[in-house]
Amino acid sequence: MAEKQEKIINQSVKMLTISEDEAGQRIDNYLLAKLKGIPKSLIYRILRKGEVRVNKGRIKPEYKLQNGDVVRVPPVRVSEKNTAPISKNLNKVASLESHIIFEDDCLLVLNKPSGIAVHGGSGLNFGVIEALRALRPEARFLELVHRLDRDTSGLLLVAKKRSALRNLHEQLRVKTVQKDYLALVRGQWQSHVKVVQAPLLKNELASGERIVKVSEQGKPSETRFAIEERYQNATLVKASPVTGRTHQIRVHTQYAGHPIALDDKYGDKEFDKYMQDIGLNRLFLHAFSIRFVHPKTGETLRLNAQLDEKMKAILKKLRESKEINP
Picture: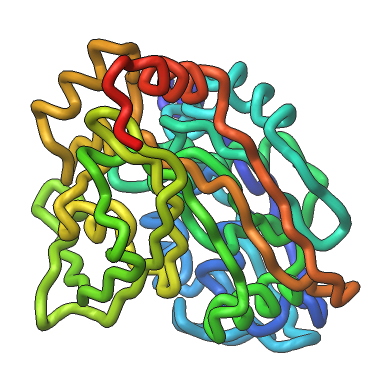
């Protein structure tokens, strides 16, 4: 009976030669990408037991692969329940195809829907990256360039080559990637507040939930803001993060006294109730624009993703309010 509940991910020993494009990554990350659907715990177990070998020798999980390395990958069995999330979410997986707004041999840009995590983890077995790998089974490499919170919608970069990932990570490091978000916040955003600089400290609760707060012990963080439109009880702002900390825009708007609508971690219950009454049912934070240099062509790309119709309808209702502030 036990065998019927297992699925063989890798049916026989494989000897894989590392290409120049694959070089530089850690062996554990390489195996996670190669053995799709395998839990991390099993990856580390086969590494620890010496079942995975590089150039016939044992290696540690942090070993960085070199061009020409030969990796021995053993047969791997995994419980069917660990592979079930993708099959249970086939409709979501298929729908993601229509959300791809740009793709070439180097990278893929997705307009991520709200409510889908970018990757499995923290109790979630299914995410955008797992879905994309299911959509592109022939792809040798698919990795997130950056992340978006589960409830945030908008533009997400995915590298299709390790060289592209390295290039885009360097652009992020030197802050040449421009990311712009639209956020609907409580009250009247003050015109003079154009920049919020507040250090952010990340705490992980026992449950695995991440909570971020402003703290002198935190990492330097900066977000630039501009007012897009004012309403009676809310303001639509453009938020442009200079740094890329976890929950940065959400915490910086809260710190400025204007939490984002329907933010279940940092929001305001009274404001959220008001927004729910007019039909909002998700966090109003959307990554609508991104600018970066294409890692292969050197061309500057600027991609945009409009708000969905439901979000536009919420703004229309606010706009039609009789007491709109000038």
